[in-house]
Length: 116
Length: 109
Image 1 (cartoon, helix red, strand yellow):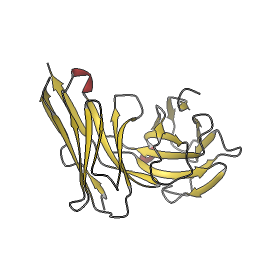
Image 2 (cartoon, rainbow over the protein chains, first blue to last red):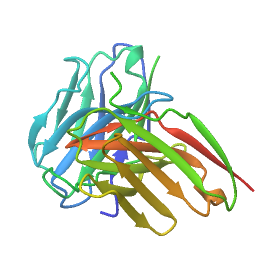
Image 3 (spheres, helix red, strand yellow):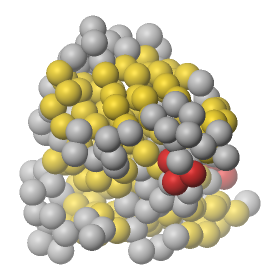
Image 4 (cartoon, chains in turn brown, orange):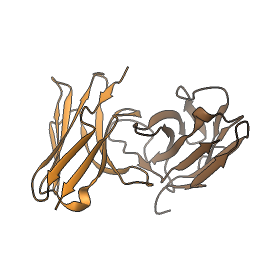
């Protein structure tokens, strides 16, 4: 595709609901990353996939957060029992290389999650 | 502990002048540095990058300088244009990206 796409662009959830956020990376990109951006802050790393393998999930804030990329392309970030502190913009990025120097990540437009 | 810092939350520059955005980092393991530009309601857009083996990279109006001994990088935009008004993030890579807090650049006509 032309770029990274994410859906939905905006999501409002009641506290306690489960949400699923989708990311379509650039076609053929090996690596996929999820970031969380709070208001007025820079994005913060959540998790990283190389093809279908989740190689790093050190940034996931709690076990309520779960990500998958079963076929090595589309990825879903799931948040269970959402809480108000989960309100943020969730960004997905992809890169063509499998890590290493010079691996530029390209970002999608993000999903703005608001938990009431 | 903030590994990447942008100490200026905002910067205002007159059109046609040079804009200089600064970024400091603490982790000497970072091997690749990037600048992203972000407009409201959009994701960060890649602007320019530099490998740790270089000290300068230039692309049109944008130049990034890296001073490894000082753990400091800067982005120069010259001449600045109104369309450059956005939030700029520096990021450092050790595979995953670590971002600074961003600097809001405003170019005044």
